[in-house]
Length: 291
Image (cartoon, rainbow, N blue to C red; front, side, top):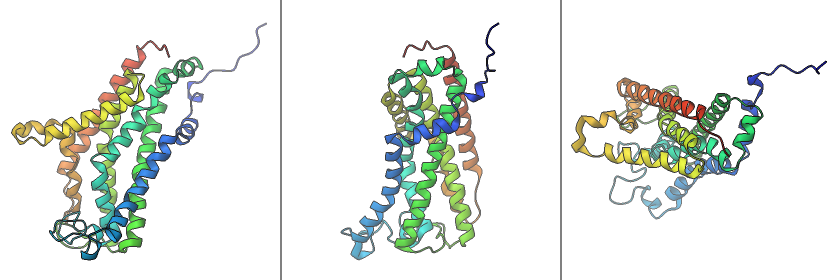
């Protein structure tokens, strides 16, 4: 008689908790968290102790950081809420894109680069289970970093500039409850806009065995889209670029939130992410794993 065997369940392989702990222990994860905490600290230090600190941080020419002008940068030092928004403005165009691309682009390619991918699949870990776990953990880490940036910026801003309510660049001050609501809406929208670079990086992670290549390609694509979006001659064609809706979160600062552009931008990024992930899954299903 043959020995009894345990029933195999794909849900018992490569659990989310195991993969999350494994990725958190990596050095690049620590660096990402340190960067988003260091950014507001550096900015506060520059405002408080920099050459322009004596004249309010804005310099003599106006239009500077915390100079009181009715824009996000000019109102940055009016309180913790405005400081958090300014840090989101500074980081959403590049830093957060790199972090999202890193967490999603490094995940599968690094296993291939380390020659451990084939051993994971022999374990056996179903291919789609592996991709699902890798993608979810990458998104979780990206969202945690984003929330860490917001919370750290608010705490540092509260110590440096006080915890006064959000001053809108469109005029007027909001209540503390409204400030929390607007910051939550903006943070959520920025998280959704990160899905496009994250999805593209994940697709490249499946196509290549070089983690840096996957991350770099996704970042370069976003940069190219941003350049195209800045060319006025393209006219309405720019509306087809995912990056065209990157700044739509400013509409959340109106006296009444305007959802039109944010709804379009959110739908665009969600659909683009779904398509990119679907292509990655189909490609990985047919890929010969040799490393």
